[in-house]
Image (tube, rainbow, N blue to C red):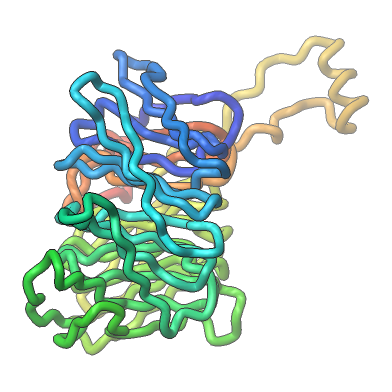
Length: 373
C-alpha cells in the first residue's frame, strides 16, 4: 500500500528524484544534500553534496540532463553535474540577491531554472555558452514580499509564483537569447521577460500567505494552498475563474496535481488529502489517503504504568503516537510515478524524517472513496 523509509530523527526539508527513481536527493535540515541509492527495501547513502554555507531550502533534479540544482539560505544556487566517475561537481550560480533563496525549479525543457528568494524577486537563470557560466535575470515588479513557491507552465515560458504578500502571480520567464518567440496561451499573448500575465489574491483579509503553487498537466489551471487552511484553483480557460475552499484542517504546506481533475494537498495535518475539481471549477474534498488506524497499545508493565502516571498523569501512552503514517508535518510532495496528468504514485517527506511513497492503485483497495478516473 505505502512504502515508508526512515532517514534518522531530523526533519527532511525537501526531496527530489532522479529519472528512474533509483536515487533520491534530500536535505536533512542542514547545509548538505544527501544522495541515496535504493538497495532493495533500503536506501544507502551514496554521496553528500557539500557547497552551501547555510541551510538548503530547495532541490530539483532534472530527469533528462541528470543535473541537480540546489539553493540555500546563503543566497547561492549550485548546479551539480555527475561526471563519468560518478562524482558530482558543483557550479556556483550568482543569483545577485541580498536575502535567502527559498525555492528552485528546473523548467520543463531543462534549459533554465527559476529561484525564489526573500529579496522580493525571482532569478531566472540560464547557461551562456560564450562565457561558459550561468546568467541570472531578475523579475521584480510587482512582488512585495518573499517568494515562497514556484512552478513552471508546460510551455517552458510561464512561471507561477506564490508569495508571503498573499498573492499568486503568473509571470513570463521568456529568455530571448535561448528560446524562440512563444505562442499565445489562455493566460495571455504578450510575453516579454517579467511580464505579469495575471494576479490572484489568496485572502483579502490577510493571514493566508501562499505555501505552494502548481500548474495542471495541460497548463490551463493553477492551484495553490495558503496558511489560512485554504485550497484555491484558478482556470485560464474560464476567464480566470477562481474557486476557493476553506478547509477545516490544519494549513497545507504543499500541493500537486495528480490528474486533470484531482490534486493532493499535504501539510501540518500529517495526512495527504485528495481533492477533485469538476467541470464548473468547484473544489470538493474526496478522501484522506492515509488509511492507517490507531495502533493498538500493548499491555503495560506495572513499572511502565507508574512511570507514565508520574510523568504525564496518565496510565497509558496511546496518545503520543498519531494515527497517521507521518508523525509530524509533511514538508514536501513530489510525483513518484507518472506525471501531473495521470500520476499513479506520489512521495512525501516530513519533519518526522520519513519518506513515504503512496501507490494509488494499492491505496484504492483500502481507501473506498479513492478513484482517480
